[in-house]
Length: 183
Image (cartoon, rainbow, N blue to C red; front, side, top):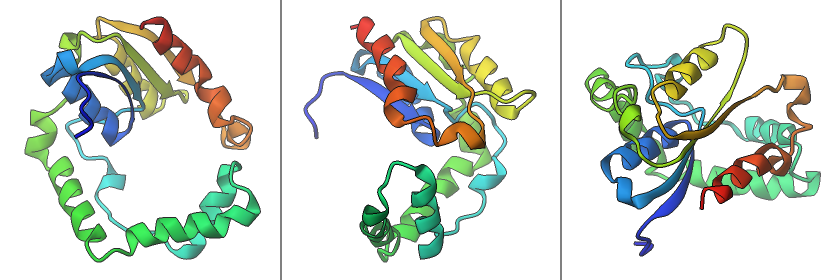
């Protein structure tokens, strides 16, 4: 246990789903909530969650090079750290159990965020990458509209070509500034 009575929660994807549930179930423990392209908005299982495939060494090397923040000399060590995690004997089994739970239609309906967001009392920052007529922009609107205390929402517009020019600091700095203003 960390011994924290409450915290500022920053989350992404499935972690955003879990973080929003935490803010709903235990509001006294969440001071501010940041949801970055969070899951939990659809009762249907997204296709990419149905297939579990561990990355190959070459895929990890290409991914590391594509991030643009890892120096070429550090890629090998970063890949080894990642491979060590996915090559653990229990890694695939553990991930499979989590994904089976999170993709089960009964659980997706039971823990759906659409009906919970209006009751989240923490100041909430909602961040989505927007594409014209994309599923992401539709889900972003469904996420933002019912959330009464969202303090700031924005769409991060980034194309594949410009994604490498957005460093984590410049892309997230306004996010943390918005949180800090709220205490």
